Image 1 (tube, rainbow, N blue to C red):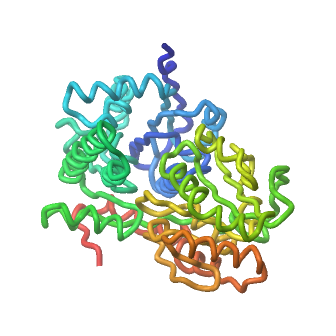
Image 2: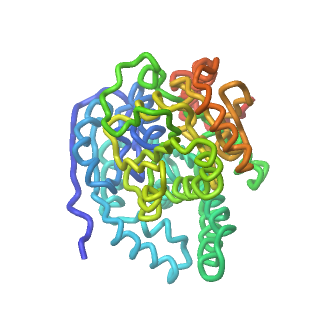
Length: 420
């Protein structure tokens, strides 16, 4: 069995900035998928004020080539290769300890040792944790005096609850167990840390509602943003040979992530037959890395293209007649929707996919959970690509990183901030 490789250190520069420990469950670079887009932009923002000492895992060997790109933002970087198979086996130990499997999955004593050493060496007083799975590295009593801020991003426990609703038998029991135990862990972290952040006010409200009144003031929504210069319809996109030359519909996302897999399976099963019956030439592009076997099998059906990892996702969005986000399981904010809107594309989304973004229906935004309505909207865009759209302006007005991360610094300035 292959275990994680040896740890890697990089000390990049001496800085007069106050040191800050940043713990992240996945390397926050490059910003090419949901959680990494947010973690990178937060890291970038914090690096403007602090000398950031980053500890993270690398769960995709493809990302190792990008480690040096973090040098611009970090005073030092410690990263561990994570073998997913070995981590899953570790996760099962939670059944013997009464813990959610998420915690042992992400536990490595080398990360714990590095955390202890870096806090002592740099006399670190401030810690930013990205993802509840990494809080375990600074929850011991010796860290209680540190100013700790966590970005839960989503209410992860609630996603497990949603997963359980779609399962039967042992699988249903398994997912409900993880939901219950992870919710307990999330609540413990909230009680211990100075502030708990979430990707939207909606997500923060969901979590806050289950907290004691005394803790509710420490729960905040910090919106995601989008790089409007990169996701600009006027930008110079690289050539992508897999982009169809005929009208097509596009879905983007990591295709080994269950919520995305579930979304395209639902679309192909319930929506695509309506579309292909009316427009036999229609193309549906599923764009994203590591497609599961279920997703790969969809390419056997007429008109469906599964690309796998692509160098530049923008052409698959910009050249599409519309972008779909038919998510049936979701929490937080969908970056795929923000990116499509920034490129001023028409979007057809489910109610869940629009949560936290809260754009209203318009000429370029259709929100529906009904398959026939969903199909009709896609067909409308396939038949009329000359739709007057204002989606990009919505993003500029509401979702630039410069604006959404503006409140971030204040959570390290005072321990008792009450949101307006």
